[in-house]
Length: 322
Image 1 (cartoon, rainbow, N blue to C red):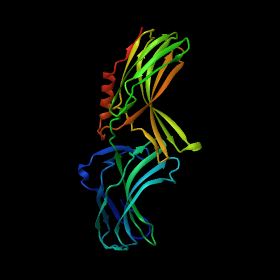
Image 2 (cartoon, rainbow, N blue to C red):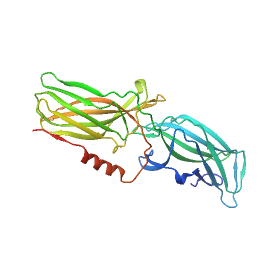
Image 3 (cartoon, rainbow, N blue to C red):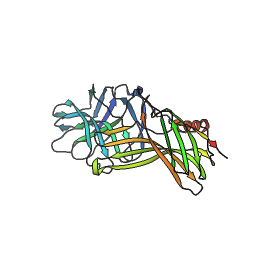
Image 4 (cartoon, rainbow, N blue to C red):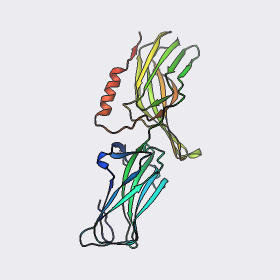
């Protein structure tokens, strides 16, 4: 990248160690565009080289060159006040002059990266390497490269099923059951809906995956819900005693692990919303929170989502009642 301003300009390039063998993942950036980032886990060391390309015959006076590893949370509606939860610095060169191109090695070891990279509707959690050439009388020369972090979780020791009875007095009484309350991101939700009483004319039934993103805290907390997927499981009027199966694959969807109160800045929760619609288009629903965790690292593959969604559509039975 070239930098313009007062004084001599230069190019800075950041390369990670063995980056040709690193996996990549697609992440939404601050402008909403998708970009591929090199993928690390929370236990990985971050190392590589910084290449500073000085134009031939030019000189850059500086008061120090440093490389930083930054972990940051940004509210997209308040970008001027980011929160840095991780900030580590490596000094690459003491004050002096740059008269030729140079390469510097950097390494950040045993750095806790507890939280995953996240890019939501109102908040981003990002990690990046920042190289800064500091100058007295001219603007600093700065270059950044983002990286992605994913963390593999552990199988929950306790994972109870979800079973509830809900309804409207003398009109509708149903029992629904999901096989688990905690799912990994490539898991399958298996369950059933059992009709104990049906005195309203139901047209169809669906299950919706909802993501709820909460930012801020206390009176300044803001919640936004997003329907990730709507999945029809019944078309037609059910009768008393009928049982409707549920088989919902999670892998086709862009889900993240559940985030709980990350540095008191944001949370991300997921819900399964059971929705019944009658012939007058009145909607009856019941939400149930589920916990999501990552079992394996997930990298970007072209066509993966489309193929997975088609597989899910074919593999999942829809029940029709008469």
